[in-house]
Image 1 (cartoon, rainbow, N blue to C red):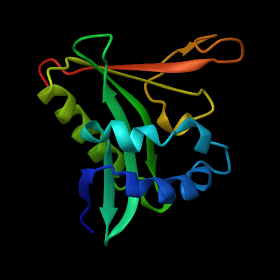
Image 2: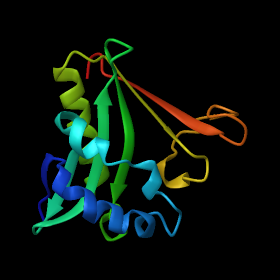
Image 3: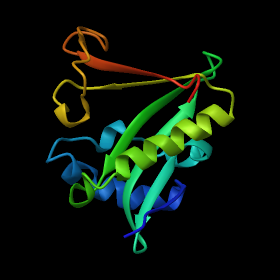
Length: 145
């Protein structure tokens, strides 16, 4: 099965919000992904489709405050598609889009409970998002990529 990557659109929002909590194993995640990503960041946010069905997405943007930096806000892959390389394809698509816009660095954060996204012993930043807001912070250099 080949995946098709395209820009995320406003029309994708209802479907993504309907499955997001399920894709995160019942965790309440819908409120962490506002509709504005589907309206204002479509140049750097992507949907993955297989057989005409949305099976993954990435919401990201180019920083207005930090020239040369981009940020990945949210990535989701249908649990039935995990391990297929779909997440990697979404990330690589974002990295290429960010680099084409002059970015040399990409940042992202996740909750320590999201063990599936953590690799390489990345340390936890205590209190990053306030009390009880511990986060794992990722940085990817696009130099030489």
